[in-house]
Length: 112
Image 1 (cartoon, rainbow, N blue to C red):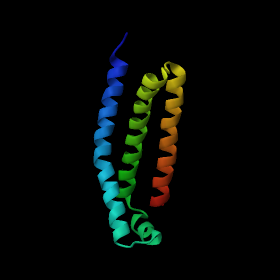
Image 2 (cartoon, rainbow, N blue to C red):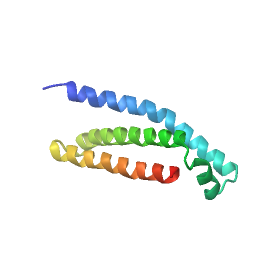
Image 3 (cartoon, helix red, strand yellow):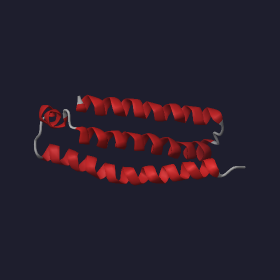
Image 4 (cartoon, one colour):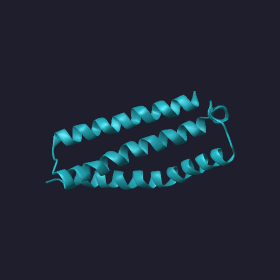
């Protein structure tokens, strides 16, 4: 049995957690700032339209979530359901791609 794939997944899980650990507080602070400042959706979009920094931030956020969540669900599927094999990995790969697709669509919509 090769431990390299498991080690790679473990490392990807930890790195993505570190990225999310930075992104989530920034995202929440931004929400609090917008809500407490009484910004309307129109004012928020006016500030984010064409802002490459916010696009990059949310793209990184989405990619980290797309790596982190499926790896965690993979472990849960194994431990709770006993689900192993290619079907599990295929479903979770699809789920990861779905997160990327939906997340980047939202980020690009806010940017553009």
